[in-house]
Length: 514
Image (cartoon, rainbow, N blue to C red):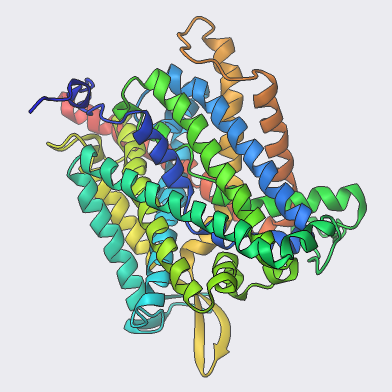
């Protein structure tokens, strides 16, 4: 049997360069598509107040995401090393900035998303198997305070099992991980495409589409957006209140669409395993983001073809995708959507688990993370980093938030990671802005460095992203202070940890010299 020479090529670190252009594109697309596209349009609809506002929000998100991906392509081609964005920040600014990103990634961005996607998988598996319930307790809630509790329900247990299962598979080597990624990304992309076709053809036949588009920017049932305590001097606004109201509404609405479109940068974490990374990473970033954003925008056209705008705004539990399929197929539509989301979340978590561990590996090699995570196993993957990521992700599944609501004498509980993810949306934007500013810094600091790919539309495309993302961040700081400031606090908590780690690393090096 012939051997694929490229598949067996190893880097000096021991990574196997086994990811081709298709594999890399599947990681980009697969990490982006989770369950958000089937849910967040309801909230966006309430905040923007019109069918046109809903579509425009997704279009803005699409443009920003593609602009960011095109800008990252230059950094990826210039520094095709494991760790991706961590490396870019380290080289553009200092090791501290790289560490702050890696610290936040491990603490909540990557692990919290893995936990969230795991529970989403279990929740929709519960549609098919009702025994997978959020209130079937293995360990009943233990109230820790008025705000928090710990529990282990059957639903949580299934989420933990999924995370452990995918982690074990990824310790077996890159080849198995990429096969799973390609298979499930293809399946969920096809599922989303089928939803779009059904919505446009079958749903559109009911005349809903023309009704929504006759009132494209007619505002209805719009939510008032209130400033948080930090900015109590600012007015509450709606999209109807002039330019200021429009800007605030669309910036706040970006939270759902941007988060649903996030994780496209994960392919940069695995740069040490991509064949011809100077070519394939920039291409996969462009192709993957364009594919997913196109599907997301078309999915919202399908929703508007199938459902009235009021139905989108008031979809039960915000499950717009489920309501659309129920409208087309009746009660079985909920089952079809559950299967689609099960496939989607399984593939999404595989990509997140595969990629995230490479950042902790890069940090450890710089003496900024647990030393054991700097090693590759016999299969050429950072197994200890994978296991550590798995343990923390599973632990994030267990804490619960207490809402104080009691329904039928049963207290309702939320999930801690959901709160944490709200906190870091602001922080994630800040890191994206800093990374793209780093593009300009490195052009100045290293003008002669090899750049196999130069950012498309430079300097205009990167500048547009920086300005737009900064505007969104400022609005979130004032109108979503309760989540923005804690997110910033999570990032800044890494500053003392960085200096402690540096100190401990220096002492360890001294001991090893003796």
